[in-house]
Image (cartoon, rainbow, N blue to C red; front, side, top):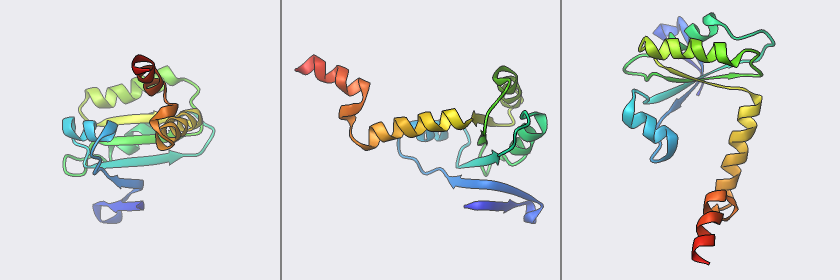
Amino acid sequence: MKQDNIHEGRKRIDITYVNDAKDGFFSWVARNHPASHVFVECKNYGKEIGNPEVDQLAGRFSPSRGKLGILVVRSVEDKALLLKRCKDTASDQRGFILVLDDADLAELIKQRKALMYGYGETLLYQRFKALIS
């Protein structure tokens, strides 16, 4: 769902997904942390992502909505600093923010395609097949 309103429309979330995963990462995270919904904020600008952008996404979290978000950005100049900002949010129990840039999205697509077109193309399957051939 695009532009989901919360707090009677005073706040908006770019994209909200209902987390009904049965397996994989999203299933695991929902079993171990509040993640009934996954919130995605998209930042399509060239400036560095700072505390305001991290705090904006963290401000959408709640125990009833979930505390998992993805911050999608074009690129990150200082990944170590941005990771520290996201770790601060997690350490303060305000939620978990995963940051994905363009290169990360390309890698996720590549991984998904490998699974979508069959396990025969994946490294793990090839290694397993070598054991039984």
